Image (cartoon, rainbow, N blue to C red; front, side, top):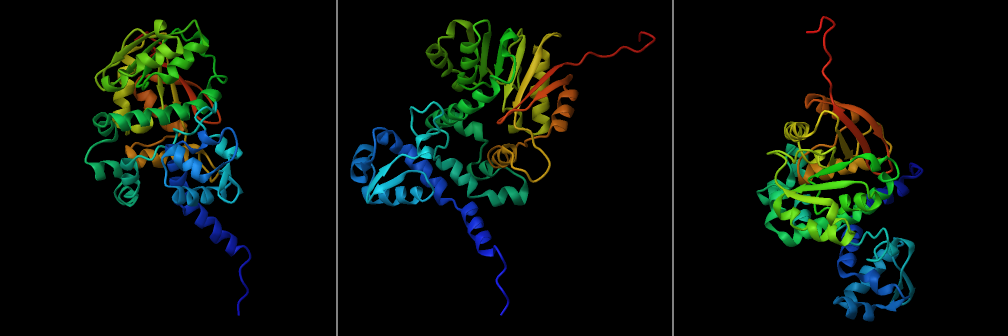
Length: 346
């Protein structure tokens, strides 16, 4: 009888862990219920948690036990649970809270259930399942659009912590945040740098939520809100134009249109800041490789390498002036390309 291959059992268990979708769904469910918020003061029996969250106690017990074996919550005594360092991040009041980062949206789940369609055809599974583009769907479903904004807010907390200290934002003058959502990112920038002014630009149904966000941050008097589509043009007159995780949603042709419209609105001495996850070669883990699949399924757009961005920018009349890597997104600074005159002056 052949000897068992060393490590094969461990490999099988590892593949099972990676292929599992039970834990991700369970995390999303307890986040939607707000379970972690009810454990701030210490352990509680599952019956109390169920009553506080409106859950079915036996089902919640089974869910928490499954998560506890992954170190998310801990069963301190039979039927009684407490927070762990991982579960602390699911609290609403945690400074880096992830509670809203992973909403359990049926439309997204349906798209991922048809991921095979994307792999087979290269088409966004979301379009295939729902018969419309992702952002068109959100425009028609305001509740899901708000939850999408909540997930962006949660992810922004970590992004802000990494990018704010990695770049000199204070000298950028007036920043036009193109497709800046409800203004959460721009609000933090303005709050940190009182010398900055801002223009928040997004589709009407999204921009309508920005004034309240800017007001809460205390920066509404330094930020104008403008609605429109970046395919038609962008507000003119800004010193700096910001595109945060926007181009990865669009193919090269659409991205080229967006960049060309930004170039048209930007003065000769202005600059463009791109915040994107750059694809890197090799087998090392990089978040850009995962975000690339998310873009592929939901919107069909590609994440790109530095060389890809250099080509896109060049075609739109920009030149890449510098790249600053962070633990989350790369900060790419581009400036209008100055056409070089020939030696004979022509």
